Image (cartoon, rainbow, N blue to C red; front, top):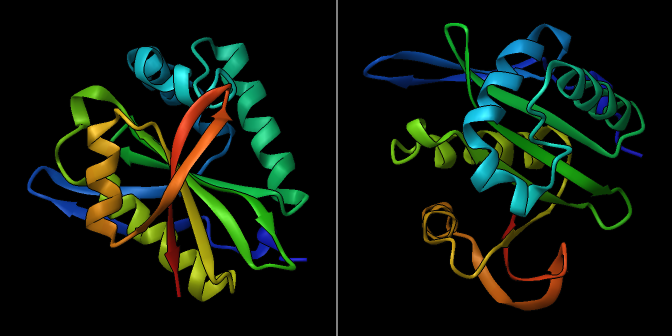
Length: 182
């Protein structure tokens, strides 16, 4: 079992021309900013990640954060937010942690107005480092919608290897499987 409760509450910040963007483990202090970011992102996040990781009301955001915290306590997964000032720019998560095989899924979303700035790649690199160096995982899997050109570019920039097409993998939709390994 991998103890996710001992992992850091913050990862090294991403430095941008607009200032630093912090990577903070999700907590109840993020309720309002998560809700606001989800409202802006719902149309491109929900079809792929579902409503659980894209809560558009304060009640749903608190429930999301509570569920993600419970999953962290059960060593199922860990979630971080990209935060600049008082705004959430996106979410990154490592979940479906398999302690025997030392593998997990890597997922993320970036709010629309923050897309195209390299934040997804920077966030994923930080999570990859956390997974391989602190969680002792040896494999991360990314499931990407075949028409999601932005996420396909992220996988390419991360150096992920395309392994194939998984039929009806995510909410009954096809997904391309990419992997990152140590």
